[in-house]
Image 1 (spheres, rainbow, N blue to C red):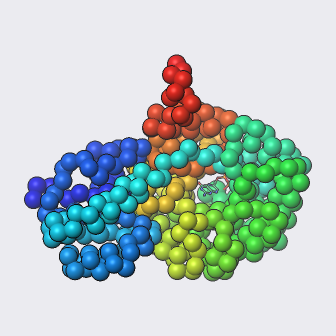
Image 2 (cartoon, rainbow, N blue to C red):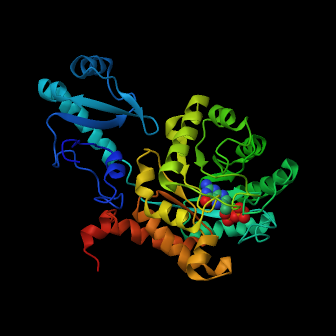
Image 3 (tube, rainbow, N blue to C red):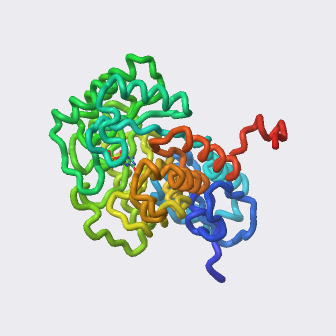
Length: 381
Ligand code: HH2
């Protein structure tokens, strides 16, 4: 890139330099070379510039901040801005630095509780509310930070179930889990606003929507009105036909662009930026190589600036990679994929085998730079 060197801060640095920083854990140091004195591009949170700073930027650089990532702005700083106003520039740098270093958090484990007869790996296990509540309690004891309750399988080839049936499966399970005193955050995995609304009324905290608001026009307005967290997941096609013949040029950049567009629709509908999380939708209209690329290049999806949830648990592509046909026996494969996803920047992992995934996530996070302070201090071997 001779003659076109530019300095980019924030998570975008990881997108633009994927080979230099293959995993997302390393924070980007705004003071590190190379530094181009003629031109810099800096990603900051949208709205973090004051009106005075905006006016100064426009005067010095002649360029207004451009929309970037989800809820971010990209500042183009020309030579005049870089030279003329060092104090102001230092303030912007500080914000970009905070932005780049902020998102690293201990990964959270989301336990899957499917109240369905036909989910691809745990179908029938948690249909009975009492058994589901027991499983919920066990998952929390094993290290689940959150639980995700679903009443409709979205496995490849699955057909939609009627809303009344989905409600009849999900609501008693949420009620039983709460009645048993399980207090961790609960999400409802649904594509229907009506199911989401009733689940939220009953004690669910957030909505996990594998259609990203495309299947039900009432979903985004509902989530905006309730002010709850919302997972926006990528899928190509519907479960019934999504694995028919999925093809991508570059799956990661195409899916990143799609997620950015859907997150934009969420913001437009009034959902707060801090309530939006993104998910590449492993296995939803993807070939084995697409799923592998999405995990390996998780860092690039982080350039969108929102927390990432990744659901690899027991999925078919892990069967293809290992030759293991039985989903429930893919725990080792799942743990490996969870570790890689966490090391590459996933903040939440959605899994069936909570104890294994919690270990895998903790070890991966430590190796990626999130060593718990207590251990760092003790020097434990
Ligand atoms: N995967 C499944 C269901 N919901 N939600 C998110 N956000 N991300 C995922 O990867 C995801 C999801 C499919 O897995 P499972 O729930 O175990 O199976 P089924 O759809 O057959 O119930």
